[in-house]
Every structure is written in structure tokens, then in C-alpha cells.
Length: 262
Picture (tube, rainbow, N blue to C red):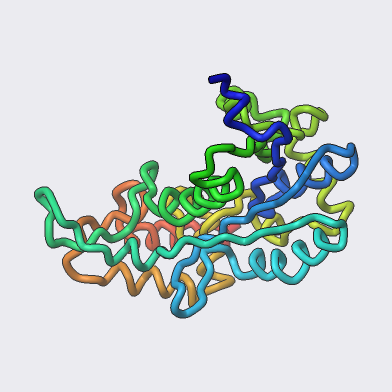
């Protein structure tokens, strides 16, 4: 049987949105150029569901819910927010069941092999897309995903699969142009005032300066990580590429002292 017989003819166009400059610019370009756009999906990683602590920087998540989503709704854009049942704290305190580390607590995610991204961000998006596509129904709906990859990111563009499309590349938008477009519409996240990278505030891939900014602006969040670092029976106390949180803190202190000298 032809594959077309298993699919609805009209695909659903969905933009995956982190509410960073590239994904917001993608939505704005779709509206500007009349590109089909049925839904926007935002996967919010949670640090702790029970206490309502998001994995996003506070000013970014506030911008998402209080500014960006209302503005997009006003433009006629349907936005869905998805969350995983698991959160960072669940993954951190998970007890290893097998192998030489059996019985130990998993601890901080390993940089480059982050289970938080897989379990808490990617998994709910996959579930969402599967439900939109039709779940177990015989006749599936084809989905086209808009992803925020700029025209000046050739390596990321080369990895795009058939059902993923970059409108930024299609219309020749670089990262800087995407940033300017968002600013022009009042949709540029405040995260760009202090850095260039969004994502989880506890990510081991954050640059040292981002952790310095976190500790300075949100000491209560940094204190959460410090407290976790003192948890007994961890599989590994490596916080960032094998270095403990205390080692990273000492490096942060040194960097701050150097800045004061100059």
C-alpha cells in the first residue's frame, strides 16, 4: 500500500518554540510571509514541579507567560505548553538500579549526555507530536516542524531531516537579523541583556559567565545547586565536565576578582 494512503493529505505545521530569538523570529516570518502555521509548542523543563520552580531563567519564563504568549495569541497564533512528568530533581535523586554504581544517586547530569534534555524536554514534545499526528490511528496526519535555525548556522542546517524546515534559512535571516526582528516586535527576551544563550539555568553546558550572572541575579537558584552538591551517596560529584560545583565556584570567584581589578 502506498505510504500516502496512511497519511492525511494536509500536513499540520507546528513551530517548536523556546521563546529565544530564533524561534520567535521563525513565527514572525511565518506570519509575515503567509506561511502555514497551525500551532506553536513550548516544552518547559521544570527544576522542581512541587515548588513550581522552572528550569528557565525567571525573567525569561516571566516574559514567556506575561508578554510573549499573550502577544502571539493576539496575532492569532495558537500556543501549547507541554511539560514532562519528570523534573530535574526527580532525575537528580533517581537511584541507579544496575551496574557498578547500583544503589547510588544519579546526581548532576553528565555534560554532553544530558538526561534532562531527553526526559524533560524532548520526550514531551515527541508525545505531543505523536498525539497531533493521530496516535494509534490508521490514518496519520503528516507534521511539518518549523525549527529556529538561522541562515548562518550551516552545520545545524545540514542536520535537518525531511519534516523539519527552517524559515530563517528560507528567507536569509541570520541570528543577528532574527534578534532585530524580535526587538522590533517587542518580543526579544530579557536573557539577551546579559548573555546570548537561553536554556536551563542549571545546564552543565552553560558558560562560566552565565553561572556568574545566575549567582549574582538569582542567588536563591544557585543555592539550590549548592545544596544538591552536598547530597551524600552521589554517583558522581562532577557538575561541569568532571569539575565539582565547588571547583566551578572557585573559578567564578577568581573571574569576578579579575573583573574588579580592571
